[in-house]
Image 1 (cartoon, rainbow, N blue to C red):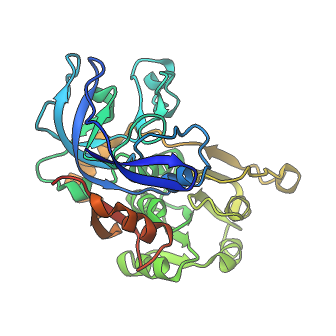
Image 2: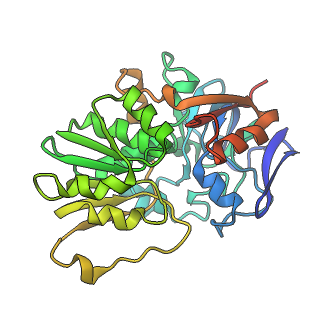
Length: 345
């Protein structure tokens, strides 16, 4: 099969690899129909993910059709259309039982697919712990509608859930890229009084204004002033998804006293928490990787028409042209938001 492979820093290649096989009774083999490219894939490419293993197939955002299952798999069967969770989790350890599936203690727990074990920018993928890692797509939901459920949409849903948003809140989302827009869609379900998105790209700002006209969009240079002009002196909730050089500092500066600052961005460099400068603000920080345990609920919301991420798919490429897809996505060319890679032929 064809599989896009991490060779070394700054080098991915589309290679021929053996089709994966079941390795244990809890595994499933999924024939990938659609995959996508995530900014985390770019972090691997540029050497910012030390735990990533050279030689692995990259990609952790995908949907497909179950081809085979191990003897202990109960929730899916061959022929089922499924989303694939970005995280591998056993469902049995302390962290899994408490919903912290990103911290699963299994050797392949957490973000494994496309990082430490072969992922899904390929024709087939092996999914360990399939009962936890796969969710059936409802018949009325198309593959494209479900493509982001297992990663960026799960991230946005989780970030929203832990941010404790109330209806009289002003919520500031820093970053209007794919994860930021998925976060926006989930924040909108909470119906806060006001939503502000900070985004530096004029194209992405225009995309948000066009598709979500009730949302205010500001550039980074106006973000702090906008936040400080709010009645409470800052946003009630700040969700930082951009991961740019100055956005961590901007996030806490834009928060009102006693606000919640939720950080789900992945940074290339360590960030400094300047405690002497923020004493008295009494901020609550919530940080870390997504806990992708809400995928079934997200699929129900999609089925009910309450979440629609299909406008984010601005480009489609076959797997044979994945190099072109990466070039456009990485360089933010041609108004790209997200790319769908068609793996089924």
